[in-house]
Structure formats: C-alpha cells, structure tokens
Length: 325
Ligand SMILES: Nc1nc2c(ncn2[C@@H]2O[C@H](COP(=O)(O)OP(=O)(O)OP(=O)(O)O)[C@@H](O)[C@H]2O)c(=O)[nH]1
Ligand SMILES: [Mg+2]
Image (cartoon, rainbow, N blue to C red; front, side, top):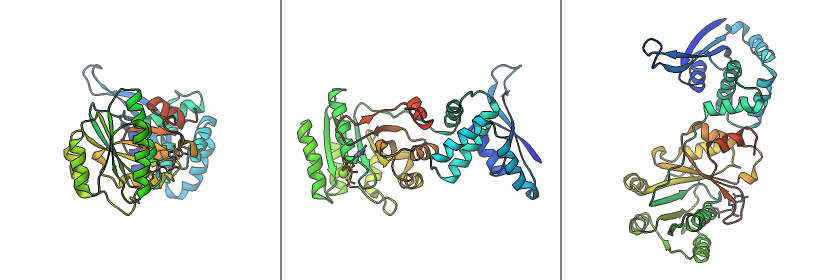
C-alpha cells in the first residue's frame, strides 16, 4: 500500500490534496489535529494531519471493496445521504472523502453530526452583504422567479426595514414582463422605470435615489448568452451596484453550477435561490455552495408574494443539507 501523510488547514483542503495525489480510491487511515509553527508550542497554527493510502493498480478493485466493507455504519449512512443529493460526481467524491476523514476524527455520534462536519468543512458559506444604498440587478435563466422575488424583496425592504424602493425593468422582450412588474409597483406604490437598452439602464441606475433599487432583467439562456459588456463594466465601476443571480433549486445541480459560471464571479454579490418548495433534494444548493464562495441572499419557497421567501443563515443552510428543516 502506498501511504502518505498530508497536513492542511482544513479537512477539505486535505481532501483536495489527497484526491490530487492519490486519486479517487484513496482510503483514510488516520486523522488528527496538529499544531505547526509557533514558538515553544505557542502561537502555532492548528491544522489537520491525515494519513491516507492507496493500493497498487493490481489490487485496486479489492481495496475498493474492502474499503466499503470497513466503513463504519455511520459513514455508510452519511454516504447514502450524500449519494441521494444528486450532485456531480466530482463534488460527491470530495464530500465522501471529507466524510471519511470526519468519521475517522471521531467527533460525530450521529449521521446528522457527521454530515454537518462534512458540509461545514466543504462548503463556502458567506454572509450576504447589504449596503445602505444598493442597486441590485437580478439576472438569471428564464422563469426561475426573478420578477416574483423582486416583489418579495421590495415588500420586505419597505415594510420591515422602512426603506424606499424603486424598480427598473430591463425586460422589454415580453410586454407581459413589464406589466407584471408594473402591477407589483402599483400595489407597493413605488416608482418604476423602463430601460430599453444598456445605456438607458445605466443612466437610470445612476439617477435613482431610493435606498434599494431593484432591476428586473429578461430571463436569458445564459448557457449560450453573455451579459452585455457595457453593463458588466458599469457594475464593475459602480460601488453601489451589484449583480444578484437567480437560480432554481429545482434545476439540475450541474446545470445550475454551469449557469452561474457564466457570470463574472467578482461581480456576483449574491444568489437568489428559488423554488425550494419544488424539490425534495438539495443537491443544487450543495453543488453551488461547494463550487463558489457566493453568499445566499435569499431563498424562495413558493408563489405567494410577499410571504414565500426566507433569509437562511449559515446554520440553517447546513441544517437543510443534513436533512433537517
Ligand atoms: N413553486 C414556486 N414557484 C415560484 C417561486 N418563485 C416564483 N415562482 C413561480 O415561477 C413562475 C415564474 O416566475 P417569474 O417571477 O415570472 O420568473 P422570471 O424569472 O421573472 O421569468 P422570466 O422573466 O420569464 O425569465 C411564476 O409562476 C411564479 O409564481 C417559488 O419559490 N416556488
Ligand atoms: Mg421576469
């Protein structure tokens, strides 16, 4: 057996090194916390030390089987949960390796605790940053719930945070789309403006004085289309203008991740994750949080405006992923 020792800041970092060097069939033999650097045992950095191994090619099949047989009942249960998420193979393998390490560490007594350690080590959970004055351009694929969510966000800002809100619609592809937002603007009694091209949109954004400006854009197939360059440049240069990408949690995990990868990463201030009520599996949530350190701005849970929306914190997201409510 080829055995190697890895030292890394987190379980997940160790998992990446192990997979890179030993491949997907690596077996975790031992995990412990170590302190490296510092003086006379002080000011050192806490790290994890993982011993992992893999058998030579001729034994690989039998090792895999043995590895499975040697899994603790807790790890088997956790792996079953991870498999059912429906994440891409790459993400699944990394999660399983991290779960293996968390199990070896021995801090988990239940499947939920083991999954919690695994997700905590693997996912990039950042808080969504709200600015005092903010323009949010909401973009994303067709029909995910952009316009509906904008109405929900506006209602919250107005009634719970006492903010002033204005709408800009940049969705002039469909006449009904402008009318849809106009209806919400009318009910909420806030101003609405229509932009027919990028320069009009930029001009309108620059002239708003409301605390929160919500820009509704036309749903596009971002797998084949890019955001207009002029708009990307404006968002890049404007301190208060942010891009928020709306994606459906009911979409296939890999498609959602691919869609997100089409937006300039450094400009995406947050994710709007919609249709939690339309899926029984949170694979898409897991895939997105695994791949990108983009904060979740909100999650929508149904068609009712403004009720069906929530603002889950890091712990809530972790709880959902481990199967809790
Ligand atoms: N089940 C469910 N339906 C939702 C949710 N959010 C929005 N919808 C519904 O999804 C459909 C499309 O919503 P829109 O807000 O028009 O979606 P959109 O992204 O603006 O669509 P386009 O502008 O055409 O790209 C509507 O029937 C909404 O009621 C949600 O969280 N759960
Ligand atoms: Mg719309």
